[in-house]
Image (cartoon, rainbow, N blue to C red; front, side, top):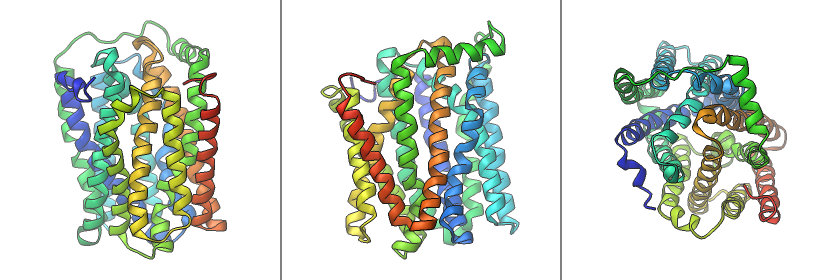
Length: 399
């Protein structure tokens, strides 16, 4: 199946394009927040809290968000969630522009935006899966990942170039404006009418049904175990890269933006050949191979200071990351029917964000005590251990 086949659906195509613009703003803000906190604090532990503040709200609210998303009119719900996030980003721009650029306010508003993300993700993933044919879900997951990673190339690069020129406040404002396209698409979808999605059960029953459905499936439990360990280990890269650039490479924001963009560039390259690889390799084998490459990237980073080595290394890591995320995401989306999809996906997001939040704290503390290199090396070893477990049990316990 061609990778672009899901784009034949007009509504999916419009959402995909608008979401890519929004992702660009998200990456610009992610860059600006991390580099600003790293510059203000000079601490690996505090810098890693940017990732913690991003993912703890998802951990706290994902299960609630999944239950809500299966009982509301999704376009209307997604419109208000995106409007809330745009207002949070605009508030951050105003505070920084007013001279209140401190780690505390940045982390608090990052947490507030994370709450919006927590409520958007289950509804958005369930909505996107419903806009394409079941046979196109895996291609749609790869396209969504491609959109995210195209933005991951441009966003950090723009942030690196503009941070010292126009300042972080303007970058936060750019993120606020990037929601305009999504708001327009969701508004039009909402105003078209269509049936409201009635909640046929009470809130508590829908919540229990989601838990029973997800944890009652042995295959889904395996997916969740892998998600927890994978995201716990791999968050070390995003959490520690600002400190790695400042303390190990002794370089500035443009280098940080370049290396972030390299990961996204690798993910974009991966989209060109992943459909062909998936036709020949089972999901579990592909995931094990991708984790091996990503773990090797983290281990090698712990020994290297050369940009000549780091740039192609992180590009390879980005290719592996794209394969990892799209494989796990598609497996989760295809596990259950549409009626319970948002609830079961919310459990996936709950586990993922828990891994992210815990990993960002743990690797930040490891870096604070034993250094950034040691933390990256230990995280790489964890990723490789997960790859070995997957490879040895792939036939008996496929995902």
